[in-house]
Amino acid sequence: MEKKIRDIIDEHLNVANLVSKDEHLQQQIREASRMLVSAFRADKKVLLCGNGGSAADAQHIAAELSGRFMLNRPALFAEALHVNSSYMTAVSNDFGFDETYKRLVQGFGREGDILMTFSTSGNSRNIVMAAQEALQSGMKVIAFSGLSGGVLKDHASLSLQVPSESVPRIQEMHILIGHIICELVEAELFPS
Image (cartoon, rainbow, N blue to C red; front, side, top):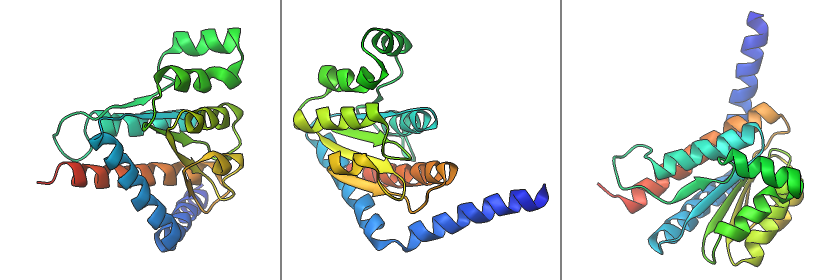
């Protein structure tokens, strides 16, 4: 068991090391931060979505932006789209699960807003449909995914692809990247 634990930690560190050396990904992270700063300065909002563990990641990053990350500062408009369980179950039942996020983007998203999507494969149909709807609405899409980017990368303004095919390692890096973005956004919007 100890060897298994060390192997998992080593795998995590190996992927984190790849991220730390990936200059293109780091440039994409900086660009994602600039996109959020511009949106918040223009009084726009950030909507986030994902499924399963990626839904938890989306909600986590939404909380960091809307509540606080490192600084005590005013709230920013960031909301995870799946937090209304009555909506999610009704729309899934009435229209199908693929429509859940698309319909929320139609209802809440406006031109200039940002949709942050989380999908380790980049192939989750409901996430791809939400991204397509967001782009058609004049929103920007920041896609968090894994190595290939999946179909989602073709429906994103910016694609943050973690250099791994391991779902747990991708999700761990999504939180790291999300935290980096939050810290950069706070530093830019709320200089001390």
